[in-house]
Image (cartoon, rainbow, N blue to C red; front, side):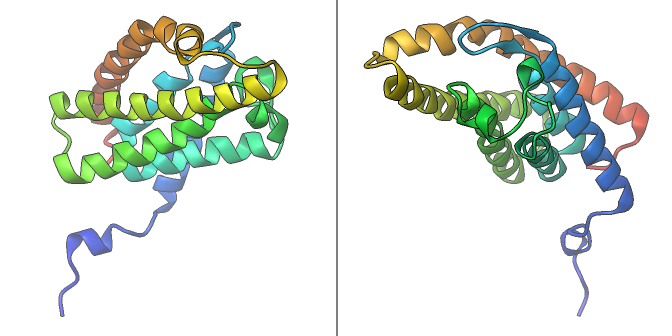
Length: 189
């Protein structure tokens, strides 16, 4: 019985592990590029989309998972050089966990729809919406538990609306840079 190409590619190579580690590191560096706010403006979302564009869904998702695990064990990889469970339990921690949901959705959609550039933009926008939904719900729960009731539109005004245009620009930047770097680095997807 012949093994299909898809089955052969399920194992991660040493090069795959290096790419995953490098992109987890890029996510950490991008989180340090931060403008403080209720939910800090960072380049993390760019790094998530960049990993997806360059590495593809599977390895990009693993890079996001490694990044989050680095923070969970206490490495200061989150915005403001924070790390540990406390950073995830805070009001903006849901957006960090939302990166994993975003990556999983993008991976699944990539399997269904392929890697055409226009499709990747739509997939990344869907991934961004997943991140926004999870992060906003988390923010509301944490905020209401510590401060009191708050309306959805108020939270969207704090945590989503100011980020819409910058995040779409990050998607486009990730797509342009990712295609160029993937081509020059000869990274297989």
